[in-house]
Amino acid sequence: MEQENKNATRWRLILGEDTRALAGVSLSERETVMDDALAAIYNGEGGGSPGGKKGAGLGASAPKLAKWLTDVRTFFPEDVVRVIQSDAIERKGLTKLLFEPETLKNVKPDIAMVGTLLALKGQIPEKSKETARQLVRGVVDEIMKKMEQDMRRAITGALNKKAHSPIPNFASMDWKRTINRNLKNYDVQTKRLIPEKFYFYERNQKQKSWTVILDIDQSGSMADSIIYSSVMGSIFASMPALDTHVVAFDTEVTDLTALCRQDPVDMLFGVQLGGGTDINKSVAYCRTLIENPKKTIFILISDLYEGGVRKGLLRRLNDMHQDGVKVITLLALTDRGRPAYDKQLGKEISKLGIPCFACTPDRLPDLVAAALKDKDLSVFSKEERSI
Image 1 (cartoon, helix red, strand yellow):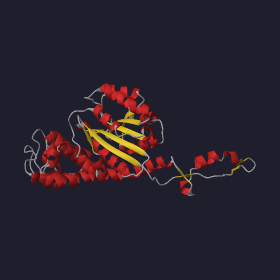
Image 2 (tube, one colour):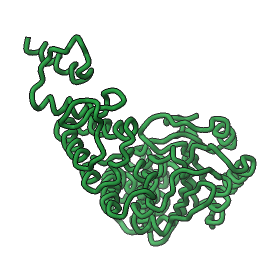
Image 3 (tube, helix red, strand yellow):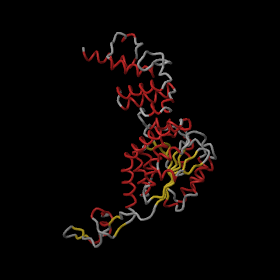
Image 4 (cartoon, helix red, strand yellow):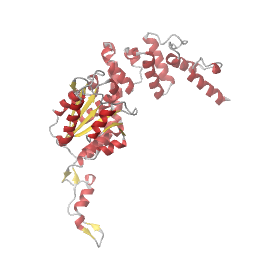
């Protein structure tokens, strides 16, 4: 009986107070607060009011919004909080969540929230800018913690495979090369390999050995990708062996390299979400940054809805590829699923021998390492959401 009552209460909270079959279900004080918080977003057009009955909406005052946010964060798990906040903005147009310091500081930050914040950053009042910046930094720091260690390990490992050191160090032993170079010294009788020389990986990169160029589409649909890209660019820029450039584009091209080297949050606030798209113009600019094509990785992050010259774009990408640049097209850099993109242009790029696929952030280290090791990236793309 007790379990039946719990199930009835759960369904009552899910379906709302207008559910006739569950109209007799009584709620505890805690459950009533939960019900009011949900009703504010999901009950009809007008919604409900925190601490009151449905129909009044969330109201215009910041205190009501602050109380509603506090209730949501108190009574629901973190993943549910993020869904409710997103629905509050989408269904009720609660941009006030992002404009008032007293409500903004109560928001549980996530990728979607930061994307919305960046899209509206020009409308944020002066009094809220620092709080907004702190929210963005919280999300960036969280992503950095997840990505940085694996990214550094993958890149350092890939670069270390390229150089060898005469300094004996068991931890840096290149076993494969040592064995291959000493096979001639194999003793058949004792069945042992007697090495004449040992080979070790170089552990210190004294100069920049690769150039990495991130070319990022600023269109509104690419918000998640821009956030991940800013973190990725910051990690690259902090590695002495990589000469990193970060470029963002819509119909104009903006070089954000200096901002990214200083702080990925600065870079994000330098991005202007929305507007048109001229990929061709951006690729033309990025080509001017290439000094050694065979030691350059060019990563275009875009949904490929080109407003510029498509033939010019294909020609420039092909020229890069033929020159020896490792060209990669990421349709999205997100963990949200398959992106929307221009399938026709994607197929034309793939025909040039340039991999074109969506990539999840956790796979980025493997992708970059594969490029640095001269591996066939078309194989890598098949493991992802390829076109």
